[in-house]
Length: 97
Image (cartoon, rainbow, N blue to C red):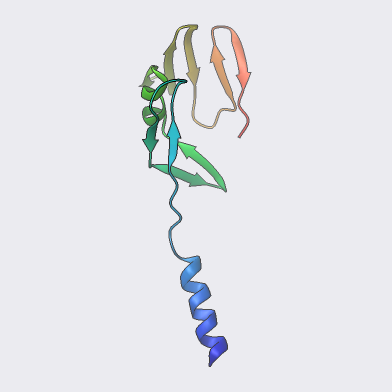
């Protein structure tokens, strides 16, 4: 009976949602809390719409070209879903994880 109860407790604990919070800030600024952290294939992701404002950047989804354009002091950066590169001007910057 103890083994059965222990097994049920372990099963229920494995079904509990895992919550994550990310705090993001520029140096000298108060941190912004991002509570929507997505998990896919063991990797954590944040929505660009949540990340850009604390970094004082703006961006917009271009549904026609299927890319996200980010305006930065160095120019416009583009990224597309599933891409492992960020294009900044004519440079392609690899993204790790």
